[in-house]
Length: 403
Image 1 (cartoon, rainbow, N blue to C red):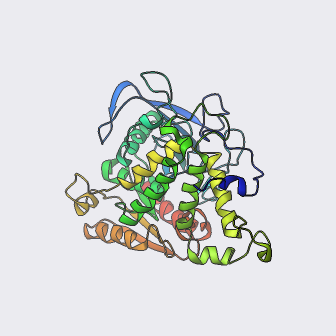
Image 2: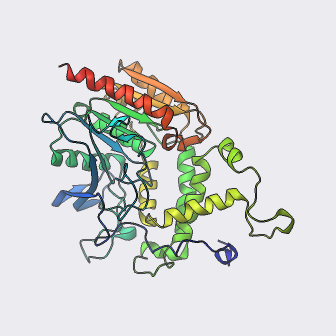
């Protein structure tokens, strides 16, 4: 980073970011619940690490019916968490990231369904992750936290399902990294998933996705305040927030599309163009600054590194005889959704899913959403996405209720 860069930027109205924006014990709990899904025993991770205690923070909406057959699991993306629905407030710095999709009378209608969302293993909003105490010294794991895979995440979610008394999910749904989890659920536990909704996701991370991930991680690694992952005792403003903010700026560019940014900002500036100085800003730069700072106030840099790499490692075909053999394990009705302007998780990848599932006789519905918003369309285009999810899940719910 250029020396003096932060000072040349106009001051933010937000306070200095904390060393970590993650949730600490003692912070307001909000609507979180906690389940210790693994206690005092070895949980061996796919790539060789070991954890001996695992807690998952989760939230629920609606009521589980007497037969425990109306449960829907919603899986979150990279910087999401369990607060998928509901207003911001103590313990929840932002509104639910899918609030328009979940609730009474909404597409995932909580008058009918019991909806669950868990903060993933490796996360920073109450689940076991880099902020958790290491067994050897009680200090946060930091960079010592082992590499986790999407399969590891799904295994812990299966333990949570057991804890909640849910044998089979009526539906598992997610977009982006959440879609990776949904696909792994149907691959690992085909008898525990009755239907699947995979949005703007992929069966395996592409070279482009891995390349973008690497650039974002380097932004954090190269921040001297990252301090090899040991920054949790730093005062506000003393953590690696510049690196995390830069990683978010990079990501935000490819989460959106050229048309989205051009339509919203064009060449508009914050300061008069005839008196422009080197660090004065175009409006699009101010937008990136805003999103970077927001993330630094609610997320942890080490969790970003862990989960970002988790996504790189995603490959349904690994160790299963290839992608076709893996997709053959998915037998439940599946809805695959693309976003036409998504240049990060391109429709090509969803078509690969559709065709691979259909080749094995799996019922698969496919829809492409038209949006100017790029990959972020799955968090924005509720007018289109809502009816798609509502119809698919509702039809499946009705079909199951007849038996």
